[in-house]
Image (cartoon, rainbow, N blue to C red):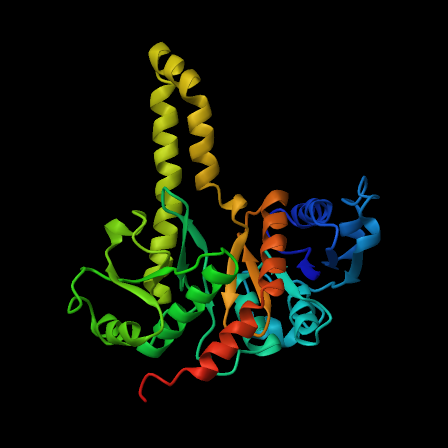
Length: 335
């Protein structure tokens, strides 16, 4: 399995991508990785990786698409960036998957214009796994498509269902539609028109999911337009940090609290691990012709390693191919 990694993407680059690559290679002896970026910078962090060095290819990619420039223009002009080179490598079958913690916009633009959409897919979508207390649910879309049509959401549901079956091993994922009420007639025009499409789709559709139930294990795939999905994503990230901060402050405020914290330390570690995005990897970009994973911008080495593993599983289980085959056999929503 050949994974192409953007070594210059993310807040902790190139250290985190390099360390993540080494960790992933040590875990999977069948894996090879191309690290693309400024080679002289990458090499600084390869000391001590002699045991896996033969499975690492360094590719000079001196250009970097930053968060402060137009993603589309960056993808068009910076042809020697890791994002562009990686997408082309996947397109040309020189790599099986691509991982980056860099600019989200650049990954989206690269996926659309360099790798290409799967035939029949209207809009690719970002779909992170989010904790729900018992495990994880897939949130699709979380920001790639702010304005959506009902057909987009129908396709998001189908792609999310396939991902959870193929990558997470679920037999029959429960699919829900994010809305302001549980009744089918609730919501805005978009959700009202999407609801009957999901009822007719070959999915285990469980109906609308209210915001308060998102983390209550009522659905394995929650479908939303990118605007609402991103609000859910950012709110959950912020709330998790706030709650953990409050708990820590109160426990350490007096002796009794400190004693309780010491006793409950193993439980707190388990909670922290469940809420830790580094254990998940990243958000797959579903709807493009290959395995693409967008890791969190602040990903450490372990998070990158998990994202590499995630991309490898997506490639091995044929997620993109299954999406294409499924859409070919399904009638359009207006038929």
